[in-house]
Length: 326
Ligand code: GLV
Image (cartoon, rainbow, N blue to C red; front, side):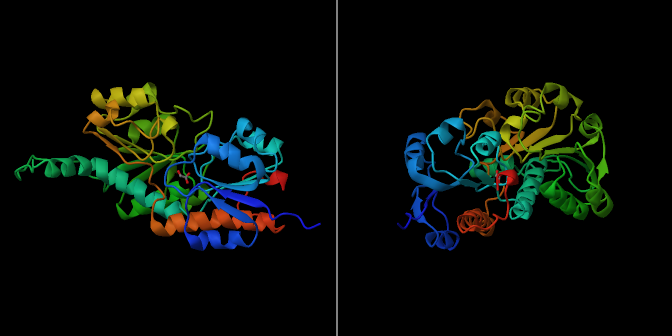
């Protein structure tokens, strides 16, 4: 007897170009909304799903897996996968894939935009103009901080960090980094210098956080670290919100322990409109848009779909996170 085609569940609308290959390898079901699918709907859809294409907004944990007896692959449309309990998936013999590489340059662009935005007070200036408070041009009005020739400290120099360091060369910046292991390629090709964390914090004019979120990086930046930074320095978080202690950051910004912060990610997300961080002019916040360009989101969706298509047709998915289950 012929087997039913495997059900593929996609938790958000995606470009048709990315979805098309999936139509030939299973029965496709797509959550047709810009809002995240509710947990209840997701669990009910997963009862007969074999392949799940998920976003960072979906929590993939043991409880979800208990509702998904047929699930064999989760293709998370993101490079980060802190929304997924990887050991749980591995225990259930389910493959997890992510989307590395395709979003590197776009995320590095946004990281640089955050640095420029906070240092040159772009958000604050724009708010003033829109409020009809254009400040009269004057030598001391709206002064910011130079990025060129400043020292950039990158915590977590991987693919995205290296792309940020490459941009920094064009701004004649000195680039320090801290990783657990050395990134020799970045040292040789981009002139980055490995330093201890404390040195990075105390010498950098811009501290950029690009590590993945995990137990050892949760609240990596809290009061002691903020106090080690220069009073004139800026913190940029383009990784995951919980890596920075939000309350400690608020106090440091309010008390001018550091000059400012620019965040693409927050804790919690979405950040409520009445969050205290949003009362501060020295804090720039954008809504988790690091990879949000049309071309890059299309590439991410395509790679996530390719992982599922490869797996369902018996090939090795191109970017597995837990290849040991293959
Ligand atoms: C987005 O945050 C990603 O991890 O790709």
